Length: 220
Ligand SMILES: C[S@@+](CC[C@H](N)C(=O)[O-])C[C@H]1O[C@@H](n2cnc3c(N)ncnc32)[C@H](O)[C@@H]1O
Image (cartoon, rainbow, N blue to C red; front, side, top):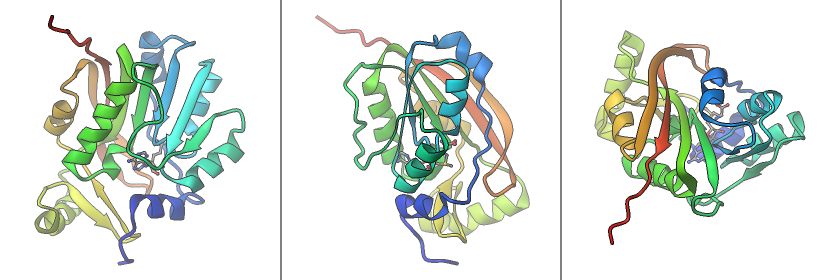
């Protein structure tokens, strides 16, 4: 087991080698987000999904990620994209300024409930009313390899579904209930369970979710 790295250190260390393959539901996305919409990919990695959106003629795209190496790789691969590193937990966008946010395999990197809630609150802040949030991520599995590693780490992390990879990173698989809880302020359009191939070539339960930010009712 390598020493545990921070998320930023880990994703920097693997930026040259990892390929992400969880598919993006483009046809569904097109039904709810127009081509000229202002779209942000949070935790965009090397920008593969933004590139797909670009090829599908979406015109107002940007991506941010905590890993500078991922951003550098994406900038080289897809120079037409606007990708930026960010450090802060505050998203560098104004309130109510974006039409859609995508968040693909990022929640799996955030093991703390509080940190997940902070990120979703931030996404809600930057989305316009009725703005769309598209998520994909990994769900709890019931095969023996996963059960063993969830159990091995349950005492340390006080939660079932968290595990360390020998490469030096801690990740989390989610219950559907936790995803529903996190999306409490969004109106669900779709929540589908699927099987994904992970970046290490294993099969895992997963989900994709599309929801709309609910309009806040101001009491006067
Ligand atoms: C599994 S990769 C997925 C990359 C990309 N979303 C994709 O699907 O191709 C996870 C990415 O999330 C980034 N990340 C991890 N924690 C983050 C956070 N709190 N905020 C933004 N990005 C984060 C990592 O640097 C990494 O690039």
